[in-house]
Every structure is written in C-alpha cells, then in structure tokens.
Length: 554
Image (cartoon, rainbow, N blue to C red; front, side, top):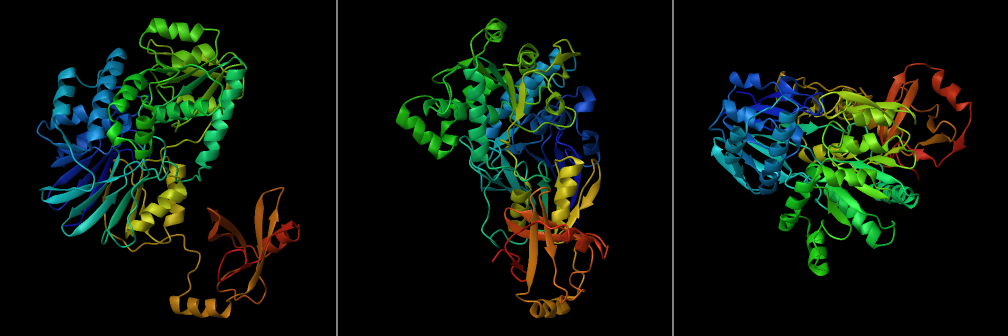
C-alpha cells in the first residue's frame, strides 16, 4: 500500500490548515485550523472528508489560529481521538481556543461550545521534541521548526518509509524562538516525500538585522514627532518579539522612550510567555536572570485590560506605541486603533507579518496615501476609513523564505515534494526552483496524492545525456564568459563565446536567477537567435568574468 496525502485545507491558501496522511497502519491527521476573516462553515477545512478516512491519531504542529482553531469541531466528530503536541503548544492552544470561542460568539457564529473546548483540551497529549511516538503502528517524531514557541515539524514512519512534514517553519533566530532544527546530511535515513509550506516561496527576505534597525528608526521618527504607532500583530510569538525589540531599542538609546501598550489577545499570551521562561531561548533566560526583571512586562509596557483604558490610550495627546491583535486587521482590538489613528498624518501603522490576499492589512498596503480601507465596525459590518497616516511594511516574518525552504528540503533529499500553505504565486515560483531535481506536486484541497516518486522532472534547461554532458563540461572548462550589469534596468547580461557548443547553451534569451549571491540557475525564456546579441549591443557596466565551470566571479 502506498502512502497517500489529502490536504483538507491550507493547500493553495494560508488558512484552514489541515492535512491527512493515509498510512499503511492507519490515518494521521495534522492540524485543524480556521480561515481568518471567515465565519461559520466557510472558515472550516474539508473536515467532511474524515468520514471516509477517520483518523487514528492527531498532531498539532503549533498554536496559531489557522492550525488549531477547528480542533473542537474534529473532537465533536471523533471524541476519543488523542492530539499530540509539544508542551508549549498545549498551553498556547488553550488561549487561542478561548479567544476563538469569544470572537466567533460575538460575531454570531460560535464554532463550538465551552464544553466542547474543554473536552478538546483534555485530549491534548504533550510530547517532547525528538521522542518517537510508536503507539499506533506508524510512528512519528517532533522536531523544532522555529516559527513559534513550541512549533514542530514532523517526521513520520510507516511501512518502512518516511515522510517529513515541515509545518510552519523559520530558519532565523529571534529573541523569543530558536531557528528550525536542521539535520546533518544523510542522518535521517531515506525520505520518500517532503510536504512543505510555501508561504514565502517566491521571496528572498531582506536581512532581519537591517529590517529591525529600519523598523526602530521609523518608530523613533513617529514618536519624536508626537505621533502614535499602531503595530497590528499576531498575538502568538510576533507580539512578544516586537515587545523585546522595542524594550531593547529604548534601553540602548536607539529609540526614544514611549509607553508600549499590549491589547487584545496579545495581553494573555504575553502573560503566558512570562510563565514559560524555561521553554524560551537560553539567551533570553540569561538576560532575565541577570537583570532580575520580567522578560516582557517590565519598564514602559502596559496591558490594556478594558475599554476605558483603550479609549484613554486612543484619545491621549501623548506619543504611544500599541501592539494589538489581530495581525491582519480582520478583527480584535487592532481595527479600533486603526479607525482612530489612520486619518491623522502624524501617526503610523506598521505591518510586521503576513497579510492574506483578502485581508484589510493587504488592502491597506496597496493604498495610496489618503485612500480608504474597509475595516470591521465592531457590529459585524465594515466601514470606510481614510488612511493619511504613514503605512509601511517590515519583513519580520516567522516563515522561511525561498532560500530557506530550498535548503531545508535539500537536507532531507526526498524523491517527491508537495508544496502547501501558500498562494498560487509563491507555490508556483518555489516549484520552479525544485522541479528539475524533485517530483513536485501542488495539491488542491481534497485532492488525494500518492507520496511516491512518479519519475516526472520538469523545468530542466539541459536535456543532454549525462555522458555527453561530462564531455561538454570538460571541453568548455575554464572558458571565459562576459557578464554585463545594466544599472538602469538592474539586468545581468551574459555573452557566450562563439566557440561554445550550442548543444549545451542554445541561442535565445536567458534569465539568470541568483540565490543568496550564488549563480543558481539559468533558464531559457525565448528561442530567438537575435535576442541575446541585441541586448548586449545596448552596452552596460561590465562586472567580473565568470567561468562556465565555476559559475562564480573570479
């Protein structure tokens, strides 16, 4: 029997993540989240498909709403199902489910009852990283995935075969979470398939250090001008990271002093983080121990616990910084501040996380200054708000970019790759980098996919046989290739010498794609004999010669 995969949600979207593995010994369900901004059944994954394939066991990779908030709906159908997750995820999931119950009830579309939430939390089974669970015939192991405190990737074994499920993954360390665990080459055994997220599959994110520096500078400019700064934030992880950045910036003199307010779900989550210090990065633990102060709730940080305090902050004439949920301005406290502060040009709204295609946050980023954005009115509807405030995006993502995902997948050396958790552009772009080496599949919600290599490889630009290719490489070794850079169009143009054998590089227009400073791929765009020559006649600034063999500047 082959291993099979069905994405119930979170395949060609970021939201409603839920993935079912049909294994030889039983069925394994991973995650059950909601779609942010949707209500009722429209917010759910295709959980009805579980009727055909009832799960034997369940895994929760982490506690973000789009992965956890539909758990009680699953337990309603399968009340004896056990849910494995890390200790931190179990603690945070309780907060997210309670908030989901409150918000959905206020919207008039309660997803579950308080009793169902309690029953769900009773089914959670905290499981340490790196410990194999072998109770179901198949087995699995949690591996740290970065992204969020307690987040996990999953290595699954069934019938002598292995599948690696990345979950949401980040390869960058932050003040509140260590990066993804990456195995040494050839240490995890043969992996048949990797099922990977692709949120930023079309992006090479800028330096996090530079983004943090620019972020602090922008906040400082607004605060010095007497304005107010709203930072809509995911309550889990991002809000705590931003709090750390602001506290450090103010303590070091890189930013002016200003009150920092936490509102919405960020309040209870940050308090929970204070109680989970032993699970946080070692550097943060040492700093707390040496300073004798709480990790987050110290100095100028205040919690907005009621509407009276919120109104005071909103209408105060003093400069202030507010970190409030939700991160996409779908609901919660952040739209309340946005409606009051966006119309004033001396204020600022800084986006620090992913914005889905339909979110108010994405719309706001696409606006010209003075345009209008539709924000929740607090009564189930929307209202137009003029945006004259400074609006800017900073890439402090908790997801790996294209380079990070390619590197992680390569460490597991799979035969097949499935790309999920991303919009069409990011998934397709990442597939373009992978499909000359792996059998790549872009599943749709509800589609059943076999987790075995079909033998298909797409996108390779060299179709020459291996023996002939080696002969060509030897023949053309150390051949100089002229490279020109056009500073006006930011184009790199390559002039191939006439003596090169056309069977290796045919005539036409090529695209040079660079990955983190290294020549990574040359792709033929158009077979036009005159295209390349015509471009080179336009001239440009010459850059160092590269060799065909090395593909690197000499």
